[in-house]
Amino acid sequence: MKVVQLSVRNFRGIKSADLQFDGHTLLVGPNNVGKSTICEALDLVLGPDRISRFPPVEEFDFHNANYLQTPVAEGAEPTPIPIRIAVVLIDINAEIENRCGQHLEFWHTAERRILGAGEVAEANAPLVVSCLRLETQARYNPEEDEFEAQTYFTHSPNAEPDELDRVRREVKRLFGFLYLRAVRTGSRALSLERGSLLDLILRLRGTRAGLWEKTIERLRALDIEQDAANLQPVLHSIEARLGKYIATNVAGRTTKLHVSQLTREHLRKTVSFFLAVSQDQQPVPFQQVGTGTLNVLVLALLSFIAELKPSSVIFAMEEPEIALPPHTQRRIADYLLGKTTQAFATSHSPFVIERFEPEQTLLLSRGPDSSVVGQRVSESSGLKGNDFRRYARRGLTECMLGKGAIVVEGLTEFHALPVVARKMEEANEDLHPLDIAGVAFFDAETEGQMPKFGNFFKSLGLKTFGFYDLAHRTPQKKQELSNAYDIDCEHAYAGFEALVSAEVPIDRLWAFLDDLRETGDCGNFVIPAARPADDAVRGLVMSALKGNKGAGWAARLLDGCELHELPATVTAFLGQVYASFPKPAEVALDAEADAAAPQVPAEPGAEVAPA
Image (cartoon, rainbow, N blue to C red):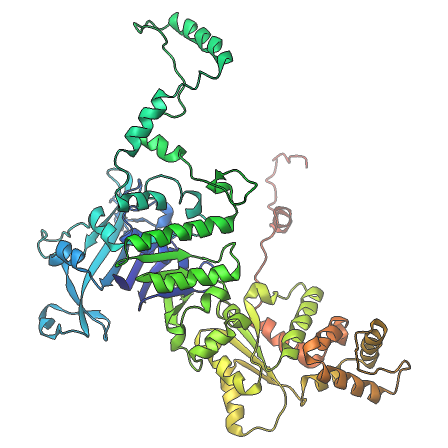
């Protein structure tokens, strides 16, 4: 079973979204773009337990909390604005086909659409496969003053006119959809509450029969007062006082202490899974172990469920990297890709992102009307799968998840330009910090790769900035660079070292060399004790920077500069970046707002309250 299409309307932060999936899918994008909302939408339409809770949706599950349309005519009743979530499922197994045969339709895999009524003759494998369309509708019921939700078969040929057949819970369980929310699932995953992962495992294995009856019987027979002799006089005293006001015909004791309310629902909430994580530690409730251990425990449960339902498991998992080391992140990603029928994951971690192919990675973005669109990374221009995996941990994913990318051609610039940016931000509070604005630096390693990465970031909707050396290049090569960047800066020097040596004041250059010699950090590079002529100082700095690119000396030199000593070429370039991402207007504090508010003159005769 796989989801190939999802449509969302009026759900949480998404006013509209139409997304296509092709197997495993990694959802990436900036915060609040809608990644978790998409997972919640899948749970609402496919999860067997979400619709059953009361209420299934709430006010803020509706986009902007708009669940009623203001009537046009005065005095008329408002019209409910529904939530609508629809999916198309393919790879239908035999059991589901037998249960839902009348609701089956045909999906054209190449054209990615449902065949119409007159196209039955085109329903030929392998391009055309059977599918199910499901839709969840949620709305406010004014008469009951409640929010309601139900899932239906979109294709319901035997239903009454203008009605659809409901999808029952037992059918949804056959879909095998499991949703692991970030952090939230861990607090109850190993409890026995309804819908928890442990409860689901017991249900799948059929081992719950008689569990509660036997447990309740044992708890009822447990006498906790037996070992608390000092409790007996207190209880007898309470009974004696109760007898003065409440007449009973009970022989003997009328009160008793139990460890539980002896109901199934209460036991579900109180029974807890204990775990020992080291030899010198007694078992403790699972909620008290580390977050990383808890997430691994949850993964273990999910793998158990996958083994119980090997032919149909769809996982939706939020941020599997939380509190986990890189090797565990990779194992979780590999598990999702290799052991599930289909996996939906959200992540900001390069260790997770690199495990998904570019065609499996869906970059989400928002439109001005709260619409959400998804673009496969493989559909962007210029970047092959090997490049994507190679650079995933080298800043590629950080840029992808932001709003802008500053691409440089080497490691020296990659370390040095952020230093200049930090100093500019420290000196000018009006500049919007680049990390907050979502602008990241990226090292393309060579000038030859700069067009490729610039086009890649631009095709993802990012603002692109290129910074590279002066060189002899053909008009075609120069045009390729210019086309790849919104702001293209070919500085006037044959190398970044030459730029720094020429534009940083000579006194600062010598202070840098002198510091290298005094600290002994210069290694085998010879720096004279006496300051030579200015040209010699500049030559020494250039040689030092060129010969020690990996040592970060250029960044060290710039870090020792005052604002006015920084290279003008670099500050001018970064100034254009800051201009592209202006600082948002700050919200005035209460005192500032009161002071800025226009003063309304008091009416004649009005008393003025003292300050």
